[in-house]
Image 1: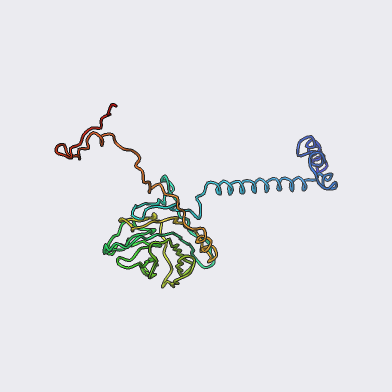
Image 2 (image 1 turned 90 degrees about the vertical axis):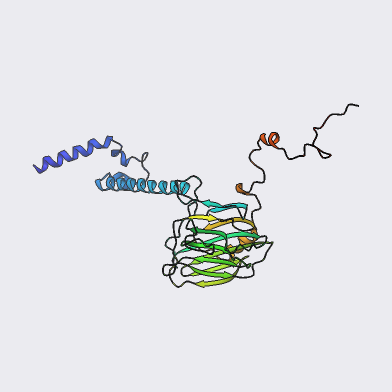
Length: 307
């Protein structure tokens, strides 16, 4: 009985020699060592199948990563590209389902905890004493809430404002134990472009002005991020210009911040800062009646003088 079983198994192996798998020992089909190709053993066939499966899995994995790389949002988006008026409000949606959204991606698996950096160019014309803080940008709440000083409440991660009466910048950041932690940067230059960089790394926050660190703040607890939209120049903003609001999902080095400063602000006008209207109604010409109708200054239609 054992002899018959072995004979049948040998016949099956011989019949398989006509198939593609049976041609495994054919040097024109597969390249490899001659001894391995000629062995044509069951082990060699299994190894070959395993290698094919591994190659297929790797191909699928690399292909999916490549597709994700092409379709995923940028980790370092320019939330405002170009220059805009400081009093014109703009909202940058974070929901990918909304048209025009620019999701702000969080850092992941960083050695020192969460990391991010915001950089922005500002040109402050003059201070208007409105009694409230002038909004530059923040990520978080859509309204001021219970705050009576112009700050949006409760979520600022981060928030950048101008002091109500002084040329002072106010930076706000939420933490888990404190709703807000604030710092101030005094004597900000007026009527010239300045670059402001807010860098958070772990439990510390650094503020740079024109590539030079001017303040380091150690948080009392872990910084708290949120999923709110990014709001720019809300509540009439400030009197001046803003350019290139840029987010990075990691802590920029001093050299990288200096490179942004050396590049300077983008002076191209943003779409929200168009000086020409999109249309001009013809009714204005027919309904305009501002000229006097009688007297020495009465309006007259132009006439062609014949010579």
